[in-house]
Image 1 (cartoon, rainbow, N blue to C red):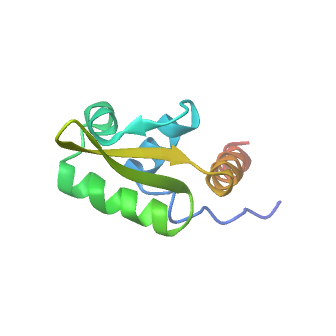
Image 2: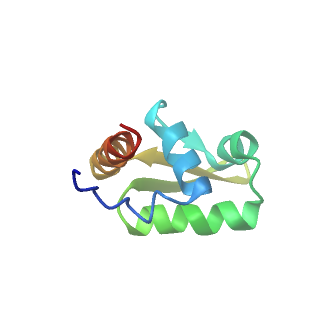
Image 3: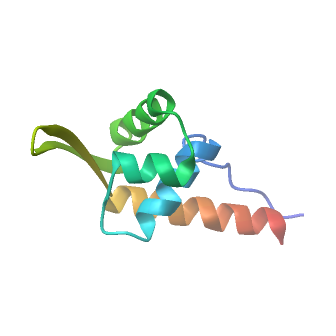
Length: 95
């Protein structure tokens, strides 16, 4: 029996995995778009984005669009590598 790679606990959360999956396929996305796509509450999404940002998996930019605050998220190279490793580890569990 082959050994299993441990799954990245940061990406093993359903919401954080959803955020990463979304950002992997996009150049960047704003907070409202991510919130709509994931169906998360603003508070929960905010906490999860902060965790991904602290880990260096995503880059968060805060600016303004007119007078409204705009938070934009973009996946980093570290995040892409972590995501790819997570997907590969999952494939190893399935095979």
